[in-house]
Image 1 (tube, rainbow, N blue to C red):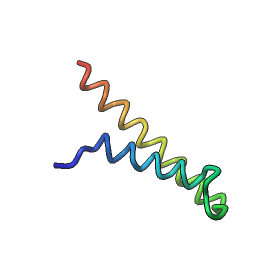
Image 2 (tube, helix red, strand yellow):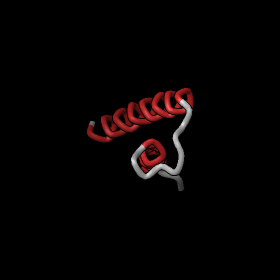
Image 3 (spheres, rainbow, N blue to C red):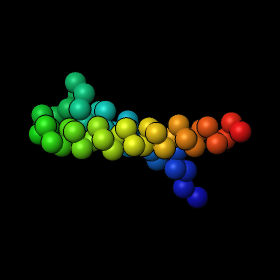
Length: 55
């Protein structure tokens, strides 16, 4: 059984790692923007899922 919250958080973690100090190579600007857009969407999804759990 998959856990969408865990999957979203792992995606965000990997994306931040790719953009962080430990990256192997610099990413093109458009790739970075796409990753940021996707991470923002996934963060919103995680927040919505956590809000639904609290109710």
